[in-house]
Image (cartoon, rainbow, N blue to C red; front, side, top):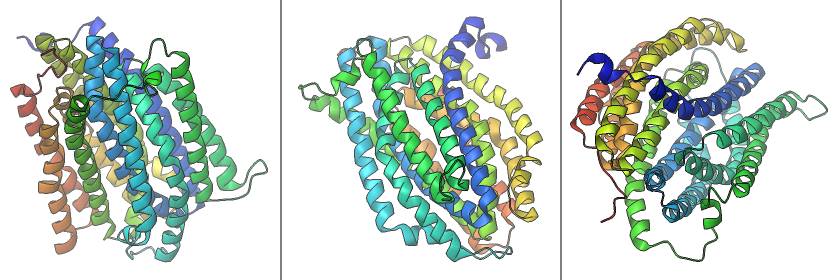
Length: 463
């Protein structure tokens, strides 16, 4: 097969891909851009405050991704039931998602409330900048207490939004998110700095703004879906008196558990990497915070394209179109990796200037620039592995994705970071580069699994 025919689609193909991925990019992009502005506002308050918020957000990141993984396992069935035009199946899977989300929110609130001191303290190490460990701990605890109040609406919102996206409705979640982040930005300005008659709350004000915006987003999304209940009947299916069949519940949980465990272990692995980097000093936490803030804005491109892989390929598999699913997936992976070469270049150009916006030391700013250059170079590799991950997931191969993501993380990446940080004198930049380079090896593994076709499965075919 010619290169163009195999890897490049026609105008109709890219129109379909962009119709799904662009609203997700806009939603995630706006969210991450507002998060960037929030982060800048906190960064203007001080480095200790910025480091405390960064640590808490890293801990919440583990919970968010665990929740995402549990719902994503159920979402495999949603996409395929929708492709089969089975409304009852979509309704029942949505109810399972709500159960998963609310249970995980309750567990997260309990764990982070009880064990906050020892968990936060593992990231606090003396460095060369003279930053205060005690002050950073205090800011982190105050911020965490308030952020926990937003976990329940977050779980409900993710349940509704993910189900809508799996039913090819990506615009409504985007609009609800846009309104919410707009309110979040205004409240941040008011509450962090005490503007427009509001009290000066610092980092606690940032947390209050986030929680309020999450409740607003939840209400808006539920209200819109309820008004469209004739088309998206899953929202009324919550109140159905019929019980979810044990066979469906069991099948969904079996597919969800590996993904949930995978997202937990992978995100926990990322958190452990941050802990390893933090042994080089508290200023490293600040530098990583700046790096990750800008990196998250640019990552939306391949993250949205990964969602497009899951939706488009999942629906083709549910419809039994295996050959078309393979061909479409190949083009999607090539598109994702190719476009991120250019996205990485743009981020590299901005890397020397973005850290200058923060009220921190020159050393922290310089470190952040160096870390951003590393991530700019790695972006196409991350895009490739992300697309491979969603390909495997679209066919229900959650056990394989567990091996591909979490086992790889804990067998290679975390041990490397641990050994280099504890038993060598390597600087933080060398440590960061060595750990990020493991993504290249992961690309070859993803290529093999996708090419082998282990993911070509129809999970909802009538038996």
